[in-house]
Image (cartoon, rainbow, N blue to C red):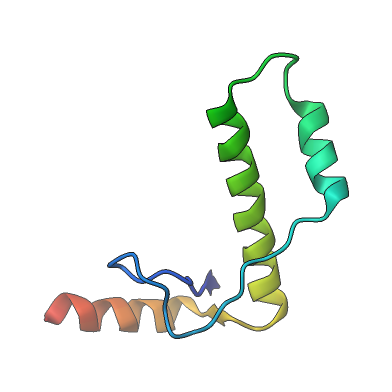
Length: 82
């Protein structure tokens, strides 16, 4: 199954209304513990962004916001025909 994206192909929020997931402090602490002693801010921001996206994906699955492979292919084929 494929997750429904909260962002359209044009970079706009979709009408699906998928809220941003909150990341538990414990997961952030674990992520920080895994970092090297010295890390640049861009790497830290990227890892926080990635952690938030993973949380959002897991929340979407729990709430049933998923597409089957067939549904995904049908949507894509309609877009490709235009």
